[in-house]
Amino acid sequence: MRVAMVMPMSPESAISDVMTQAVPRISAEWELDVWCPTEPAYRPCPVPVVPYETPSPNVRRALATYDLVIYVLGNSPWHSRILPLTQSLPGLVVLHDVSLTDLVRHTAIENGTLDLLAQQLEPEIGHERTALFTSAFPADQAQAWLELCAEVPLDGFAIRRSLGVVVHSQWHAGLVDGLTLGDVTVAPLPVPSTRMGFDSNQEDDASDLLLDLPQDALLLVTVGAVNANRRIDLLLQAIADDAVLASRVHLWAVGPTDGHTSVELSHLAAALGLSARFAMTGRVTDRLLQAILARADFSAGLRDPVLEGQSASVLTQFLAGLPVVVFDHAHYADLPDDVALKVDPANGQVAIRDALRLLVDDPDERLRRGEAGRDYVLRSRSGTAYAEALLEAGARAMSVKPMVDMTEELAARLGRLDLARQPAVVDAVTRFAFELFDLE
Image (cartoon, rainbow, N blue to C red; front, side, top):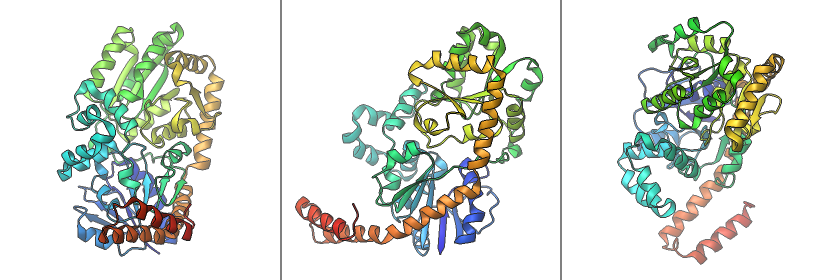
């Protein structure tokens, strides 16, 4: 079977990293080509890579010659030249994020259709939200934007014509169930590799932090982009709320940050008397990230609201043998109870403080959870296991393809007959098709 997988191939794309881990196993079963938007450089890949400039009709026609197209989507501009193809040629969609609001907006801006999209959305989401959606993102609206992304995920733009959907948590599967004619497959996302391609263009500016860290300090880290929904503010408040934590714990936010968030968190740390124990490293190299994780004692992944379908950064922290404190909601709730230390988001600061005290006071508990986390990802989060789930999803998508083709042909014929706006006719034809092909 000839299969095209359409995904970013930038060396710096974490999604490209995990998807490429599955390619060797998939290519043993399918004749696989990887199609990708053009980039200055490409990640090494064991199968042919076909770059394209734009999602043009010629690209669409070329992809239509394959037996199956797999679209890989995340909520970033890297995918803006992939999203339009999902709307013109049905395929299997791999969703890495629950919300695609940023992606849909960015794609509309690139295509010059933002105003038209806003007109379509306003009756559904209201004037105030539509105004925010079309805004230039004032820094003081960061939290409001995250809430909009969670409440208006716009994932239908990617999956409404799909042959099936692949997600990475049971929680996400429940959110998209019923939005595609095909099946929803939950696949075990691999742990990102320790070589993400960052070393070539990044200096280890934060390396002095490790040299200056006291030997007896307990290092708590968060890993990933520092923004409002990572709830580093709650971590700072929880540490300041407890004398033992405030005297022993150093908190580092490892990852890129914007100026507004950086200033806000710096001011909060100063107000709480934690400036000497709090650091934002900025974007770091692969080498420095591994050094920080090796030195860290525990970590936190406190997303709220949750916009991704699975946390690759939490898996990375598990692999490093770190106990991880998470909120007991969204895909984090799917994690084994003996691995992640889950806290009630409704209790916020108090629950986080108590969890941190448990890990500070009980080194054996830190060690036990750290070993359980590493064992969990080594057992269940390989590229091969991921590939097996994708192969199964692909087989299911192929079985759905005739049904999708039939529904689109029915819709086209009703349109040509000027019957598409006759609800009684549409209901009768749809009901008959569902009964005839057992689509319930």
